[in-house]
Length: 115
Ligand code: HEM
Image (tube, rainbow, N blue to C red):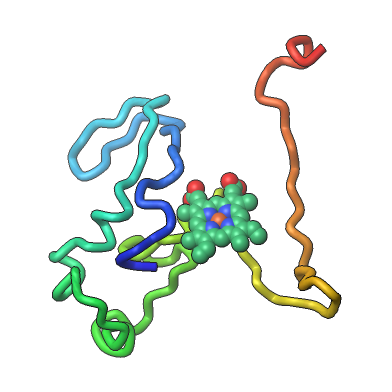
């Protein structure tokens, strides 16, 4: 999840208002993508960043939560569009999800264009 993440670049976000990130002015409407691959190998955060050391999560990164709570490790993204994975299972011939994943579809274009 840290070294070999499924999505090395985040899904794009759009700045809703002017803001400043790390000293850079970001105008409203700017499309932003995070290089998660680089973030999760940042040597200023991760000691020996290219080494597979799961024991680091028992020492210097003990309280890391991959569910979008700690921005140095966000393999499932973060915020309102974070990956909604809930792997609880229930009984069946196949493995149905205990909690169904519900999707709400909202048209992006004016309704006249869908006719
Ligand atoms: C190791 C497995 C997985 C990884 C690393 C992963 C990672 C991600 C990432 C990085 C995003 C983008 C989140 C963001 O934009 O902030 C995402 C979105 C999403 N994932 Fe996953 N995912 C995994 C498995 C799954 C599975 C098994 C499902 C379905 C059962 C799933 C359903 C979704 C959906 C529906 C979204 C879009 C959420 C939205 O835009 O509101 N993912 N996932």
